[in-house]
Length: 161
Image (tube, rainbow, N blue to C red):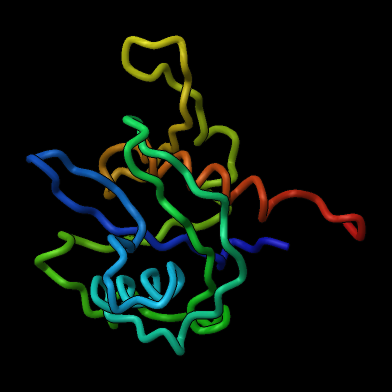
């Protein structure tokens, strides 16, 4: 069951002068025992959230990047077990990202904020999510693809619904 007080957390990075939205994450270090440990470590490094504050609720299937030379292994977690938190209390790593934002699930699941757009000069279409003006541009690319998969799982009706 989703409420408008449930949010998705993302961050904004600049890659080659390109504003890019993403979720916390990064490459696995040799010291990481598994990919979940990588996810939790990167989240702490990028936005200052201690792993004890995150309840992992699932792992999504790996997602290849557009070139097929890398896979992203997304994990879904709940911060502070669904209690409210203040975004300004998180400690962002300025070397890793430029800003942090949340978007309500109600906005992300609103069909008027979702579209499929043509990917470059291919016949393929990929998801894109409209964002409020203060976020500036739509969520697109690999981040939108992962977000779309997650939203399809968490908004899927259950037998008791």
